Image (tube, rainbow, N blue to C red; front, top):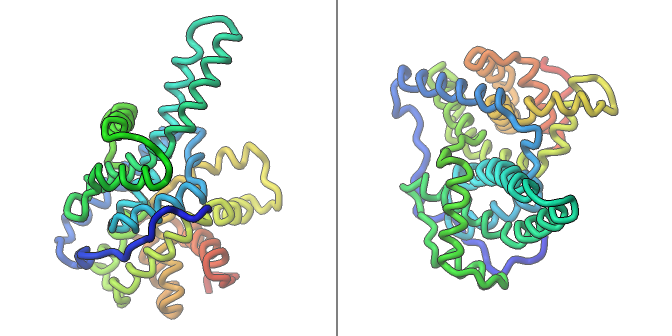
Length: 311
């Protein structure tokens, strides 16, 4: 990626994550709700899901959230929000551009719409970050002045009015359904439940490691899931049909959450690794083998570790 026109800052004044503050009944209700929401997302998954989770885009979001002193949850939510918004927005844009006129007029209208979208992509990206910062209101909300300052330093001449219009476009396109859960939400909740299940690990240590591992997983998303797919179908070159069906696995936040925790545990304490996977399986009803496959692919690409068997 080209050098960005700013220096990143360290996170400041962000409260430490605390475990064991909620009762088990509350955690159980939240976990059931998250599982239900995850299932609904997978049932209504777009065939284009994940198209905008590209390394360059994710890297920029990560750098900007760090520059604006955001919490981990903000950057992951921003990635998910941008991906979902762009897919819906392009669908709407294509429909409106191709409704009327002859073939030549439709082609020209769609070409013009695509060109405009490309120019405004950075605007939509920062709007997604700004929106998610407002969802996490107990941290630093990103002001319009901060966003405009960045855009101008990057060579863009957008105004506050442009930024407001961009934010409204994102909100309206998503029908204001913006509280999209990221895999990190599942990691946090599963760690809480592990604590109540008597897990002997230091949860804060696993939490911190999970955040670092999840960063790498987002950036190495394609090779990691390619490894999982090949392992699942037991073929070196999966077919297009197999890849299409695998999209549900690729967007399963609960599965990824278990894989992140398992991989983080392996890095910190291999002696507890198998026990943690069994705990996670009991909590989520995801098989130990599925968690292992996800975990081993993460370890392979993020650390270079090769884990051949669960034993």
